Length: 479
Ligand SMILES: Cc1cc2nc3c(=O)[nH]c(=O)nc-3n(C[C@H](O)[C@H](O)[C@H](O)COP(=O)(O)OP(=O)(O)OC[C@H]3O[C@@H](n4cnc5c(N)ncnc54)[C@H](O)[C@@H]3O)c2cc1C
Image 1 (cartoon, rainbow, N blue to C red):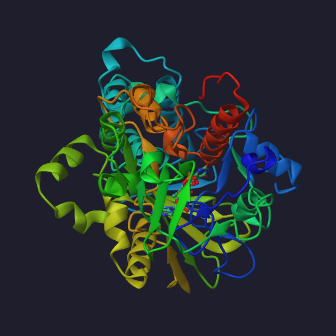
Image 2: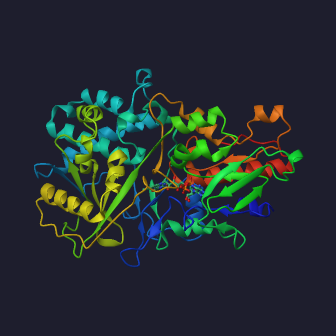
Image 3: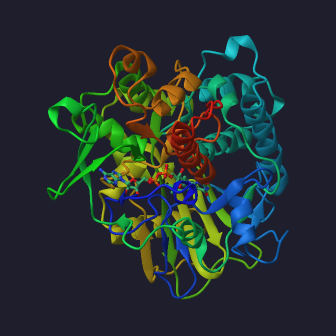
């Protein structure tokens, strides 16, 4: 859209799936109201271009300020029901104290306020160390709720465990101010994605066109009029002056080595390997009738020994595949869903989520009902419908979003991933045409990775690089 507005012509979008949107995936399996299998909220309002776009196009829910459309950082509300494995419900006070303590600790990590001794620690390690010094750690309930908080935080980090996320590198992520999670109206997230296609020529987006390989650095003297050739799986071939690659980091991890000819430079291949890309899945359960109390916003599962207890986590790493039998322990809980009064949404992350994807939906539904019954003691009926996302097995994504593992210099790696080809040092040696292959997508943003607005801004960043090239404008920094 930015390129079209700047007068660029002959733009072709090649999308592997049968629909445009990628990790924005709005569906209507339970009637006319939308269910989001991918992105759900716009994170923050201040200086968030997607929030502004949604506002401009009238796509936000109208009841601004309503709790159903917006939630605040670290918000576990008094309307969340927390149950221990024994079936005992925890008091709001008990849960609140631990959750706000936890939220204070993560805020210090995200605010780059950690002490130097935490710099090489995992987020899990840092949190454990700090929590051990708190009086809240003296109570069994406190410890168990703290484990739940870590498990829940894995959904923000898309990681198998917080022991696999760097504590200090989170400080490079920037959370935008304003309503934290803003919801979209009846068209869901897809309506917002569609506005981005508005300016394109009919036929500019070709779906079901998986790109097989990208050949760059083609030389003019060998009769190549364009420096890049893109081959699709079906055999279709496109030549181009410039290609912007926006495939997810998960796809690159699996395919980059065979996808580029010549191969990607080492700095980029290293970035693909070093940055983390984990899975977050949702499990939607639709019931004929609501069985939970009217004021209940979510049913949270507090295990006696959950997968984010350090001992359980360390043991699961050494015991081989036994964690698979306990995959359901990674489900944080089941939240109620806006505009669906009889639907619950469960959240699960990491390798356990990937394992769940291999199971039948019916079986996953049965396990969820068993959990709900045993934790709450309520009479829980069988669900009428079960629907789960499968981001880990989705061939063209292979996960949900990016995170920084311990020991990784996240800024360096995001920057290396974003660098266009040929790299300046290579371009200097040969007479290669500049900006042949450019890279966008959430994983290429230094401070807004994981988000839709991050992905959007990287698209504009790369379009601007091309615009600057043809207007011979001195490039700004492209962050
Ligand atoms: C469960 C879940 C919940 C989320 N919740 C939120 C949220 O609430 N708020 C938020 O801001 N973000 C959220 N996100 C993250 C957000 O969805 C992503 O960061 C963002 O959509 C990524 O956009 P992208 O353009 O980088 O990648 P994608 O949207 O993944 O687009 C990449 C595209 O490349 C295509 N592709 C891959 N390989 C090929 C190939 N070989 N040839 C052609 N095309 C190919 C893919 O099919 C895909 O359409 C969530 C993500 C998930 C999975």
